Image (cartoon, rainbow, N blue to C red; front, side, top):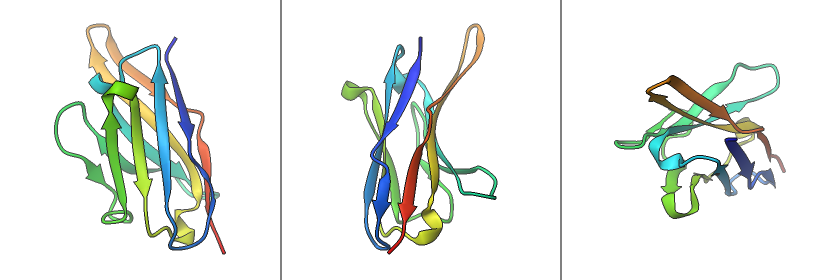
Length: 119
C-alpha cells in the first residue's frame, strides 16, 4: 500500500521559513513526478511546485524565488523549502505523486498539512 506523509507544517511569522517533507512508503518516489499543492479557505487548489523524475523543477509565479522543491532519494522523500513566507501562503499543503505505468496512471496524495503565516 502506497502512502505519502507530509510533515513540517505549523505556525510561522511573516518572513520566516518552513521546510515541508513528503515521505513515501510502499513505492519508490524517485520514479514519480511529485508536486506540492495548496488550498486556502474559499480558494481553489493551487499547484505550487513540481519535480519530475528526470528534468527541471517548476514553480507557480507566486512562489518563484522563495520556495524550492527537492528530492532525497535515499530517504524516499521530497521537500518543499519555503522562505520569506507571507500571510497569503497560509493554506493546507499536500503532496502528490504520479507516473504513467504499464497498467495506466498511478496517482497518490498525502493527507495534507496546515501552514499558517501570521504575526
